[in-house]
Image (cartoon, rainbow, N blue to C red; front, side, top):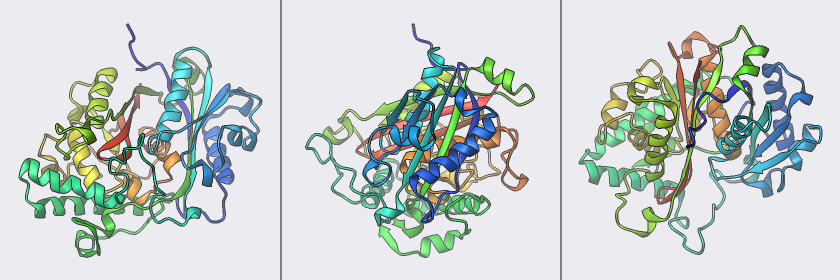
Length: 399
């Protein structure tokens, strides 16, 4: 019987560009920037990489189709290179493929790199993400409008007053801005108050301007290997192992039937349950040290706290307002600013989240934004809309 990925793969090195409006850099420049950073951290030579996976979503405005843009840009030595794509979970998929290659014993050292150059499209948000086999399933609405419905559904499901929900999502956004302001690689680096957030122009009730993340240019990379090789190459560094990798994709049940209440993500609940089982986690509220979750909108982060089985059902607002997810709280969330402030280049976001966890686990961040006693980090991606989506989860931790 299959026993999962737990402890079969170690992260040897990671790299990440500054995210933002990178007008001065092409997608190819960003690939090189992330790769050079990653390779230096791994402490190996390029010729030691045996396979690579490229994650990019909007290929037509980035690097074209296929994987040759990665192999030619980095001058990889005629090794297997494969392009991965799965909406906003694209980089997580590239990382998953790299880890599975190592765990299967096919390769010893593998690269995963995610990149996206979105500011050049001219969109403030995402271009049209398309439909599913002729059924629009909500894709013909606006993203803010579709995600805002989570708030009204949550209000109806749990009876939480809308004012309480608005206070909670304002705190979510303020927390991300405070953390992003301290991060030199983040796109948005200005702290704002909850009062400013609640006074901002309304985009889709109850989501205001500061409840919505924009898009960015950026790239991130990871080099993975076996724990034995990682230990031999870095005997004096903590071993960062992969504890779980799970992906769950909508079947159509949410959009086409009546069982879904519209107040949660079915995919996240399924992926989280499987991820904790794979990682051997019995009590995620007390065993997960920190998280990076898919805060495309502040309400998404709020309901995700429950879908990840961290907050009790109907209890996320209380946890958020009590500071449970603040940088100095029990389970800090968006420690680097999240999608909201670090930025959201679709094909790079999953690896950027892992980079944030990796840097914290190795105590490489300044004291003012350090998570104390970090042992286990979780990352969560969503791609699509609430009624149909893909969810990718990764958990990494110290040996």
